[in-house]
Amino acid sequence: MQRGYDSGNQAKAALAKDEDEDVEEEGEEDDEEHENTLCGACGENYSADEFWICCDICEKWFHGKCVKITPAKAEHIKQYKCPSCGNKRART
Image (cartoon, rainbow, N blue to C red):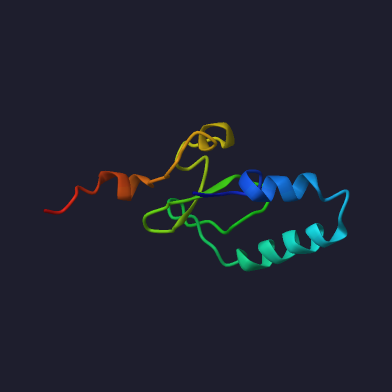
């Protein structure tokens, strides 16, 4: 599962930022990579100061607040399905 700025490997990178200047440069590259990313729910642009989560099915990004997922909740999700993908029934 991919999560926003303050979780997973990115959180580890953020903690190491004080120790290693290269990590800071990688963070800047991540911001540039997502600058054209829009929330799949509200359509607003990516902002590095907000928690985002990516659907493991459709790979769309969402503000945590738009899909009612907090960073703490996200830590316990093995595979995140957005509301749209979660409502799809398996085809037989």
